Length: 543
Image (cartoon, rainbow, N blue to C red; front, side, top):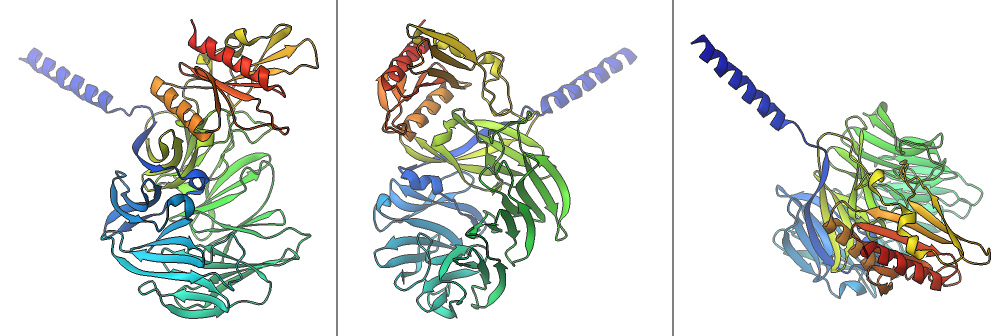
C-alpha cells in the first residue's frame, strides 16, 4: 500500500513538473497581428500618422486608402474595415489628414480655395458637418496646415484677422484671437491644445498655447535671438512640444512647462525626442558620444531608469543607435534602428526598466516606416508589389533579447565566395568585414575587387541580408522592388537600381537568390556593375 502511494505521489510530482515545464515561456518574438492593403499611397505613405481612439467602448483607428479612394475606419484589434468615407477626388490628387475629435472623426482635405473639414460619426457614417476653411489672407507659412484639430479640445482655423475657434458640434465660429504682432511668420501646429508659433528674422520666436474652447492664450514661451538659427518646433506623438534652437533641445508639456533642456551633441540621429505616457516621460538624447534614453517619473522629474541606445560595441557612426522613441504601446517605446543592411529592424524598450529587445521585419528599410501604435501593436507602413500595406506587429514576451538579424552572422555566406564569378580579369578579390548594429561577422560579409590598373573601377560586393525563411526572402525582395519601380531587370534575380550617382550613372545593383540578398556596386562604371550583378545572381541561383 505504501509502495502504491509512493508511486502515485511521484507520478503527481512528475505531472506537476511537466506542467511547469510546458508553461515555461518561449523566446520573445514579433508576430503579425493583421495587415491591410491601403493601395499605392506614394511618398505620402512615408509621412503617414495613424490616429487611434476608443469610440463608445470600441478601439478603432483610421487609415487613408488609395484603393478604394477613401478614409476607412478599422477595428484596432483585427484590422477589419468597419466603415469607409469616400474622398472627393482620387487619393493621388488630394492631401488628406485624419484625426479624432472626441467621438467624431475629422477628415481634412485640400481644395483649390482652402481646406475642407468634415466631421463624421465614425460608427454610423453620418456627416455631422462639413465646412470649407478659406486660405486667402491667412498668414500661416506653407506648407503648414491652416487649421488645427485636437483630439480633446476642438478645432481652430487661421483667417486674415486672427485665429478662430470652431464649435466641434456645429462647425460654426465661436471666437477670434487677433494675431500677435511680434513677428510676421507664423506656424500652426497640433498638440493637446492649438500651438501657434511666431518665427522672427533674428532667430527669436514665441510659442503660444491657445485654449481651443475659449480662444484665450493659456501660456506663452519666448526664445531669444540667435545668429541666424531659426526656431524649429515640432510636436511628438504624445503631444509634447519639441523645439530645437541654438543647438539646444527644449521639451515642454502641453501647458508650456519646460520638461528638459538638452544640448545637441553627436550622434544627433533624427534629433532628440520626448514622449509621455501616464506618469512617465521618456527623453531620447545624445550624451558622451552615445544615444541615451532617460525615463523621468512624476511631476518632479525623478529619474526612474536610464539606458544606452547603442549596439554592444561603440561605433563611430549613427549605425545601430535608436534615433527616437516616438511610438508607445502599453509596455514599450518603439522605434526603427538605422543601419546599412537591407531589412528594417525594430527595437522595443521596456517602460518598466529600460530593457531592450530587437527584431527584424521582412520588409526593406527603404520600403517601410513606423506609422503609429496602439496599446498592443506597433503599426508599420510597408510597400509591397500589390500596393502599400499597414501592418500591425505584436511583441510576444518571452525569453531572450531577440536579435536585429534574422540569421546570426556565423550563418551568413562569405562575400568573396559569392563574388568568385564576378572577378574581372586583372582584379584581385580582397575580403573585408564591416560591423553593423555592433555585431562582428566571423567571415567576410564584404568583398572588394581591386583592379591592377588604378584607372579602373573598384567593385564592392556586400551581403545585404539573409532571411530566416523562403517566404521572408520573397517578401523582402518584393518590397525592395516595389520601393524602386524604376529598377531594371538584368536577369534572374539581378537588378540595376534606378538611382544614379552625381553624374547620373546607375552603378548600384543587387542580386537575390535562395534566402540571400547581395548589394553590388562598381563606382563610376555602370557596365561593370551590370556584369558583376549578373555574375553574383548566377552564383546564387547556380549549383
